[in-house]
Amino acid sequence: MKNNKSIGVFDSGYGGLTVFKSIAALLPDYNYIYLGDNARSPYGDHTFETVYEYTLECVEWLFAQGCPLVILACNTASAKALRTIQQKVLPLKYPNHRVLGVIRPTAEVIGTYTSSHTIGVMGTRGTVNSDSYPIEIHKFYPELRVIQQSCPMWVPLIENNEHEGEGADYFVQEYVNELLGKAPGLDAILLACTHYPLLIPKIQSYLPADCKLIAQGDIVAESLVAYLNHHPEMETMLTKKGEKRFFTSGDHKVFDKNASIFFDKAVISSRINLKK
Ligand code: DGL
Image (cartoon, rainbow, N blue to C red; front, side, top):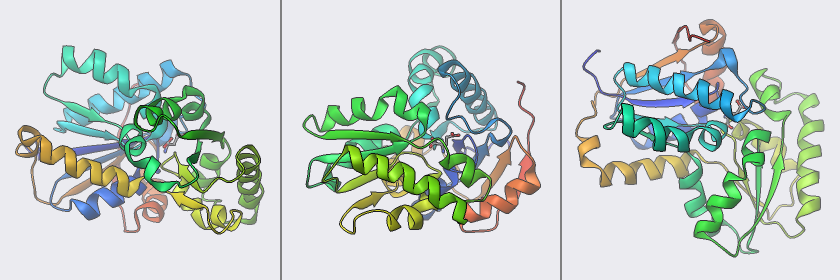
């Protein structure tokens, strides 16, 4: 195990498993380590400093397990921690390691999903308040209208396995209607939180039939394929035995039960202790 070089996949909790599922389907041969910081999730309402501190600690833990490449499969961590890690931490402490996020690869292709040149972005308060999506999307599609909607109740509903219950309808309808009210003619909505794909059937039921709902899993997986193709120095270093290991900072039995809902397969995890 020690000499194995795995791809690390990180999320505040379970949501990153929706991205990991797409990555593992497209790139089944690599070794992977998934880490969910369930003990400290959700991250959505934490300050920049806290999200940065937690994310860096998890990234460094994945580095120590032999992951030269880590994917932040979490929009909140990508919005609040990625840039500082890439610009300040890696060059000084880990010049041969790489950390990639989910916002840029999504922003690169998002314009292809809308004909009305208007895109809705639904995410946590942290992601929405950071304005990372409008900023990144406008680099690639300067004309696109980006209408954001924060959905602070959705991650707690999903993390507590209440996303299929009747109670979830209230909050799904509330945030969808708020967004539609701000953006008449909207024809595409990005789910800018890796937890939200679990709510797709409910969200869809409150949307006009011609409005597309976009989840990030496949987009991020395809951009990882492109990254590995362009970076043979990283690609050749990675172990290809198709092994997947799962870790959580929370209760591992609870993790295993809930994780299978996100990953569509049985998951067996181990618990790790994080410092703070
Ligand atoms: N999956 C995370 C994201 O994509 C959830 C954030 C949270 O922990 O609040 O933003």
